[in-house]
Amino acid sequence: MQSFKHYPIANRIRAFLFSLVVLFSSNVSTAQIEVWPGDASNNGEVNNIDYLFIWYAEGQVGIPRIEPGIFWQAYPAEPWNQNFPGTTLDFAYADCDGDGLVNENNSDIATVSSNYGQVRDGASPEDLPVGVPGMNIPLRLERTDGRPLFEGDNISTQLILGDAENPVENFKGLAFSLEFDPEVISNGFSTSIDGNSWINQDNTGVSIQQRVVQAGPLNERAMAIGKPNGSPSGFGPILNLGIIIEDNVISLEGKDSITTYISIQRAGLKDSTFNWVPLATDSLEITVYNQNSTITTSTNDQELEQASIQIYPNPSHGLVQIGNPANIQIQEFKVFDAQGRLVQTKAVNEQLSSNTWQLDASLPDGLYLIQTLLADGQAIAHKLYLDRR
Ligand SMILES: [Ca+2]
Ligand SMILES: [Ca+2]
Image (cartoon, rainbow, N blue to C red; front, side, top):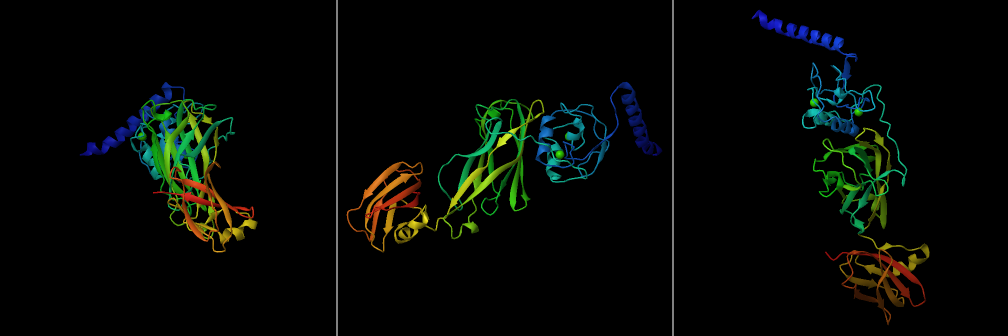
């Protein structure tokens, strides 16, 4: 029975002797370090950038912590004496759970997620280089559908990283935040890796971590995308992002449209040398049209005329109804597509009080401009959204 009590002391003596052996058998310092679980970059805060450090150190093996654990506190640890390239940062910091192995499938990644947003005294934000458009690797969201947007609509987008002029070499990880107005854009983004993307042509898998946090009046979707087991080169789409417009956008009331932006902030790209690569980011502009009002592009002078000539319903299933209570003499209607091409004309030979006509069946769904030419030579314009669904 006595002997059981002695085992822990024997273990401690053994650990002490081991550390003496390590101390005298190598020239490098074995001074203990302090690991704050989740802060793999050891800059004092836990955020999406820490995922990149873990993915980079994937598979590294070192000394397990005497006291493993994942609470937000300092844990003493033996340094592994292997650093991230070009830094004095020990891989031991990336072993968030202290089991002696950096592995995204043990709890190292989960520890970043559970301690996300924690900050300790003396934290200093990562210094991310900012790129110049046309000179550095671009990072932007691009819509894959061109149609006008209304409340409740889904927007299909792709995240584009790199282009032919500025391709990505030896990609290891990307961290960035999407900032958006929560009154217009829902938190419910959907994300999927494009199966044909250059980022997974090596078939070693792509890791994604993301979470939504509030950032003042805006919301922030912090994202991290990494390749723990590969470092592909290429350019173009890497991620499909589905974005949802809120059903009820209060600020749209009484207006024809509002414009909002999804901006890319705090973007950092790591390559296989572990350097930060500058990124040139761009915002995605989104215009949401009001389904309940006539959408016009009028100048002030035209507003009276437009008030007396209505084009409805909007969106239209193909049938255009003309409201003309003041019996203004109309000469002709011209229909232009969103690129400004004339796609249909409709002559009117008599005074029109109320009439209907069909948009050409060949016209695809989308936004059109209906120009009404009056007998007195004036032209007025209405936007009309064609949706045959
Ligand atoms: Ca950190
Ligand atoms: Ca670990």
